[in-house]
Length: 478
Ligand SMILES: O=c1ccn([C@@H]2O[C@H](COP(=O)(O)O)[C@@H](O)[C@H]2O)c(=O)[nH]1
Image (cartoon, rainbow, N blue to C red; front, side, top):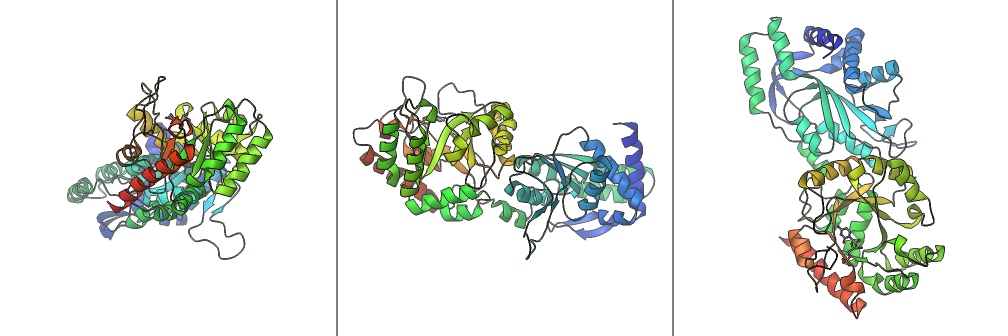
């Protein structure tokens, strides 16, 4: 810790106590739990030097991080982030708590673009509810939220709750440091200290408030009907796909892995009525042309399915941006969904977002492959979800082989499904539709050769559709 921080932490704590911003008594927190200690940092706007001191300490925590914007959680952290912004020439955005009923009706004020990184600033954290509420609004606008800095951590579980939701949070001061400073300077007696510490020990894991859980739609993804999940989804494309699955009674994605445009189009025409998604590997087509894409777009409209290009982007952001938007395939122009490996870090998603996003474009992160010997360890899968959560406005779900813990509005896609085989000669592994849906938690089942390689693909597609959708519906009833 630098001398500046050391000296000022103590000074700042004592000043906060002196102005009445740290109180002892009986209080009720936002989460509804009682507390013998309360921090009221709203007061500091009446003490400009103290406000500046708090802002300087926040700055010390964030000065080595690289973000495009900061956003203070309304209202107490707004003046703090304004001071940081003005002093360090750091662009700020503001999250409105209420939407305006006139004019732009925006929920976020300021100048920003999809894919940009925003750091959240907060005064005091208990469960982290206020930070995640702000993060969700910003994520809905396709801003990338991975980090927060808070002035005071009450050590009641907030940092852990946020971490699970993809937000790495650092604090300037912990409540225990505050108590120690106050005892040292005889501002509180030993009894108050002991009682407060005992309280903190018994309330060390406060979960998000009920309202926040409702906002995150923390209900079980597994048992929730599709339309409820569509309402729970914050991502517009996830909403669209879940609604489409409900309307068409299909959670079947067909993988048409062919090298011929004619066959691709013919399969799309024949199988269109049975599927929610048509998955392509457009780079394996020998006779690719703009007409192939035009025809696919028309069939996607005609038969009400979305186009899913399994490009598996995996490079640095700058390259991925060009791969998505440029080249002969110009994937961004026609594919509603693309896949990406998170192995290169969040830059891959920033690159995709930078390619110019619309509400009808999204990404599915590959958290876990179906092939034998894959390198997707549990830690890798967990980190993939953290990256995905940070880009909730763009990432609609994950390709995976297990029922990973995600919100109800997030969609899991499971390939490696066949009624005929348990493997192929090149490492692919198969399970039945029921195993994929019930045991692996699949929402969308991806089937390739099981359909396209059969003698009667249409009959087979209907058979898969029914088995996959029936298994999904049984899950809602359980
Ligand atoms: O983990 C993964 C990710 C993607 N795939 C793709 O799905 C299909 C599966 O085809 P089958 O003929 O049913 O084996 C294929 O396009 C893969 O590239 C996957 O199999 N596993």
